Image 1: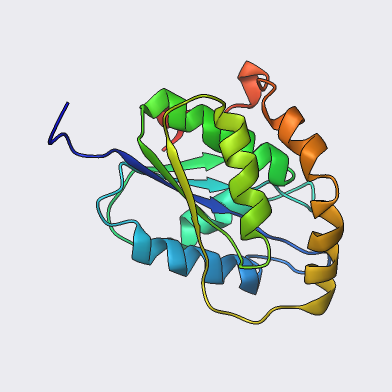
Image 2: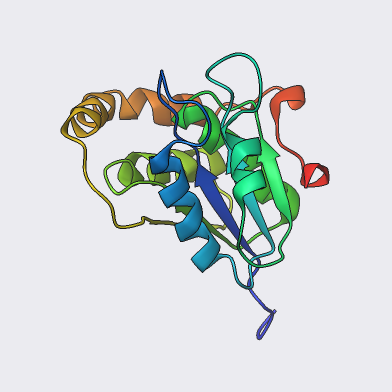
Amino acid sequence: MAGAEQKRLVAVFGFSARGVDGLHPLCLLRLRHAEELAGGADAVVLSGWSRHGAGFGEAELMRDAWQGPEVRLVCDTTARNTMQNAAGVAALARELGVDEVIVVTSQWHAPRARALVRAALGDADVSVSASSPRGPVHPRLLARELACLAALPYQRRRAREPRLAHSQPSAQDG
């Protein structure tokens, strides 16, 4: 369909840390960056669970802090790690029939996050890119991410496996 508008999904991967109540500053940086990218998007998925087991998770905290354009916000409160973030984003991208997914995460995390979303989408004709806010690179987090890269081939295979229906975010959430 020549001239048809591209359907775009912006996906914000949450971040939390032990001992931090509320929205972690790194997560807030990601959210503010997503707000800059959300104009014209069909939806924004906010992905992340509650590390503390009670109260609001990253997705709900991001939703409550959203100051971006009026756009459908979808909360994926079930994703506990990057692989689950990617699987949920891919499921929503297929449900919405989008042509493009922009993964918003920190620069040190972006290559793996983008690769896992691409793997989770399988053969779907969807463009996947990553965009990151400017911010400090924490050596401990960079070291952890480098260790996680060693598991990327395994994670890519796992990301292709379908998630359980009850754990997929739905466009109806927003």
